[in-house]
Length: 48
Image (cartoon, rainbow, N blue to C red; front, side, top):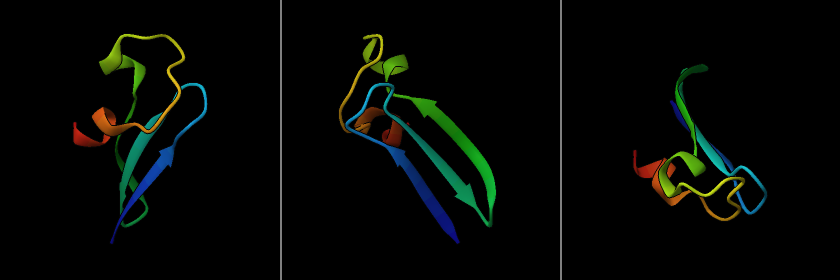
């Protein structure tokens, strides 16, 4: 089972994906938007 974990609409928005309880990948949205402490929905982090 896959689980998508989100931290959204708060400073340092991020996304992480887990498969069977093991983290596969995680990233912060600011890495893609190039805006420090970006707050909003992490669409670019999810797409990567």
